[in-house]
Amino acid sequence: MDTYRSLSPDQKMLDILIAAVEEERESIQFYHRLSKMTKDTSYKEILRLIRMDEQKHEKYFVDIYKRLTGQILRAEHVTPSRGAEYDFAPECEKAMFAALELSEYYRRIYSSFSNLEIRDMLFEMITDEQNNAIKMQYLYFKNRRLI
Figure (spheres, rainbow, N blue to C red):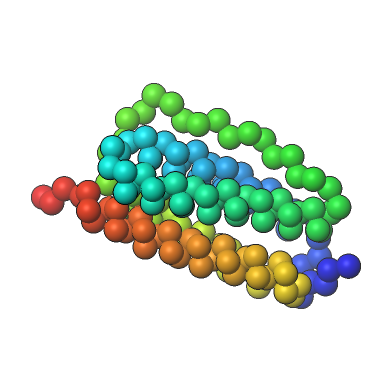
C-alpha cells in the first residue's frame, strides 16, 4: 500500500486529482486548437509534442487516482470552445504562463506524496511543463507583433 507524507487519499486529494485530469484534458484541446491556427509545420510539430505531454500527464493523474482509490477515474469529457477567433501570439503567451502555473501547482501535489513512483511521475510532469513554457515562449516571440 502506498504511504503518504501529509495527505491520505481523502476527498480533498481526490478532488485535486480530478481537477488535474480535467485541466490536462482542456490543455489537450487548447493545443489542438492552437495547432490549427498556424500553417507553419515546425510550429505544428512543437504543439503536437506539447499535446503528447498533456496526454501523458492525463494518464499519469488517472493512474495516481487509481493507486489511491482502486477505481478508474471517469472524468467528464471536455467540450472544446467554439466560435471565438484568437490571435496566435497572445494564445502562446497565455499557454506559456499557464504551463508555469501548472508546474507550480504540480510541485505542491508532488510534496504531498512520499511514494517514489508517484513522485517520479509528478517530477516528470513538472519538468515537462517547464520545458513546454519555454517552447511557448519561443512561439510567442517568433509571432508577436511589435508596437
